[in-house]
Length: 349
Image 1 (spheres, one colour):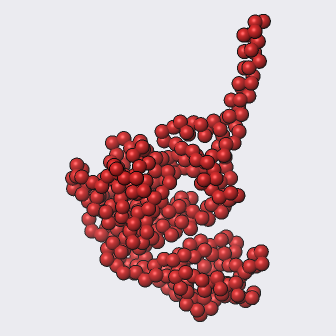
Image 2 (image 1 turned 180 degrees about the vertical axis):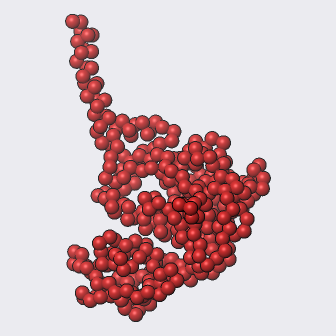
């Protein structure tokens, strides 16, 4: 046997072992890939996805697609080979695990966090759309999440507006809730909540958790809306990045005429109650997902513009959306004239 043949015989098994290791060994990275898109103007089981009670609605067609990203869950892992493949891909990406997730976070904790973000995002979108229409809104404290199995479960619900606790009015920061629960000394705490326009009184007895009385709710600032608006979205979808598209969908539903002109649009971006569009993650994965769904125009938060220009948008037009108002103006201009000059990402970032 020649020296060359011997080297091949020895090295071949080692190479197999190395490739197998790369294929199965976990890597400390999180993978991003294009996710589903959801038309917020669509129907779910025969009902409009955006439901309104107490105000006239206008369902005029077209599509406003929110975009999502497939992300490795906190307790899952990807192989080194998958990480390398994603790094080389034009439509997938990887980032170090500790830059995306907190150390030790569980799937359950992450799901709770993204669920809270989704509720907050929808409320901010409703507020932004109504303020754009000229409404003045009063602030309130709303329930964003209820922990299953805790004392509040089944008594207090998500989106209940907490009016008072033990007769004490609740301010926007909700500090009186914490004070009354932690000072309950094992006695029931009386909550007055506004639920679907009706005042309801409930009693909840806190549970001791590691020496601290708790009832299992998360609250945050919101608004008292003059009528009810709800958005039917798969509860597995979380996070705040659909805020802009929710706001546009609500605005279109509450105003005469078709904002989209019957065309297919998509986009992303957080939204603040005053209509400012904020940055999101995974823009380069959301763009090809929208392209593949048939969108003709994609709305980009200004802080994501530089990254968006590297996305695989094909013939889909990228439009910078600084605010809800500017997004509405850009859409209307584009519907009227597809060759109109629109806010661009060029030179931004």
